[in-house]
Image 1: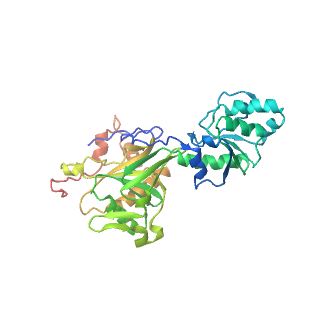
Image 2: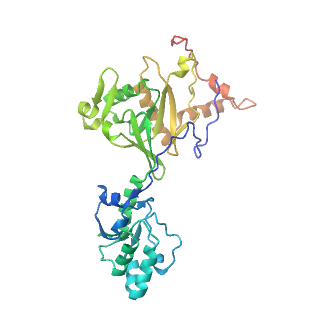
Amino acid sequence: MSASPPRPPSAPPPEQAELPATVIAGITVQALLDDPGLSFPLRVVAGAAGLGRRVKSARIQKSGLALVGHFHGLEAWRLQILGATELSFLDGLSPEARSKACNGFAGLRPCAVIVSRGVTPHAELVAACDAHETPLLVSEPKSSTTISALHNLLDDRLAPRARIHGVLVRIFGVGTLLLGRSGIGKSECALDLVMRGHRLVADDAVECKFQPPGRVVGSPPALLEHHIEIRGLGILNVKDLFGVTSVVDTQVIDLVVRLSDQGEAQGHLDFDRLGVEEHFHRILGVAIPELTVPVRPGRDMATILEIGARNELLKRAGHHGAKAFADKLERSLLGHLTPPSPDDLALAVPRVKVDEKGGRG
């Protein structure tokens, strides 16, 4: 067996093919107004004919320069905010100049314009938005509060998403995604972990969502929430069986564990024996540490997964047990003219033979 040098953690390469992401093609202004997650009401005062326009970016724009005719940088797919500064500028204009400025601004056809602080918009702005079918909305909070709330909401609603066939559990606070072929025992592992006090997030299907600055959050589909399928028992409600502390609605995916019996099925082991190599699984562009764990009858998989989660916590704290052992071995072999080869490292680990029937030699 040979081992490759550890990869630098700064730029982990994908070990698995990138999962296709479902990128939300924006949401309509009307959907935003009706969204239950919106923490304050937005009142429509003009441009109702344009409520079907789509918001395609979570970044809110405060482009007061557009009112003086500088349109460079204004992006129509972003919400536009007019606060106290912009409105005071309009106050100082003559009616003709104000009408020209408002028509130039609304004529760019932004998805929506929001006036903050509950201020009644100028008549010229209302007329311009009606003429260009640009939704004009009024929010009661000040600009900073409005921008922050809309930003957080749109970050969630516009996030890239993907659905994965797997099981997600929280083990010692580590979000662990179990992957593997159908019937290999992912759900049984999850049930055993729940009985040990850990928490189920999703079984069979995991809804993954990208969350800035660079993490992936998993949750169950609404129809499958709190449920798990165990062959021979059917579909079980984990929350009803074990209580509210046995489930959690969302969880950041910190570790991917691929359960596999392919290596042993072929009569040999092809799994990482040292733990020095770093493998990653990419979900929505995020590289997540990945382990491949062999599965066979009689093996206590729940304990192994618990140890895997504990080891991941140690790595985050800066202690990598396998690398520390390799460094210790290298220091003990400094009398050699050449550094120890990967085969030397492999020989340092006791070999366990597996015969065709799966028994230890």
